[in-house]
Length: 143
Image (tube, rainbow, N blue to C red; front, side, top):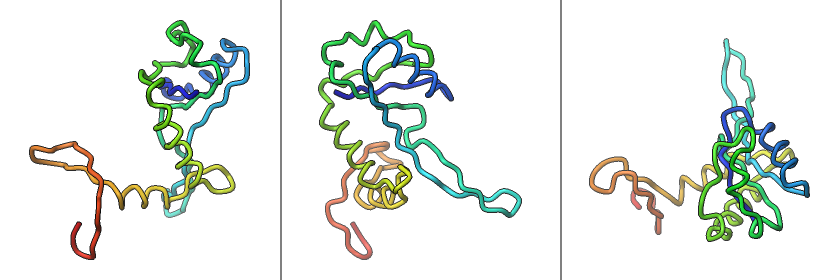
């Protein structure tokens, strides 16, 4: 079973170590990351960044039996997202999608972003502002 934790900025590793100490059994973490290039003083530099910034996926077989409310004071943790019991399929689907776009080094390739951009959109103004929609059909000059 997967849960999603929001960790404090730059405290991901501290959170993972503390969480392992609390659970005392094998726990798996997943943080999708990607590489991007930037230019500093005319030189191209590759940087690695977390796809979901401060969110960490945590998997353990017994999360359904463990009350995660008593784990809310782990060092480095902001909070656990609610609804993990009902969102297991969505969480697994997202993780599998990320893993399917990973390269040999475990970084999500840029094709992942192109696929998302080409199938979804978001209204930026009007009565439907901030609502995300799926693109059903895409032609050369219209959707």
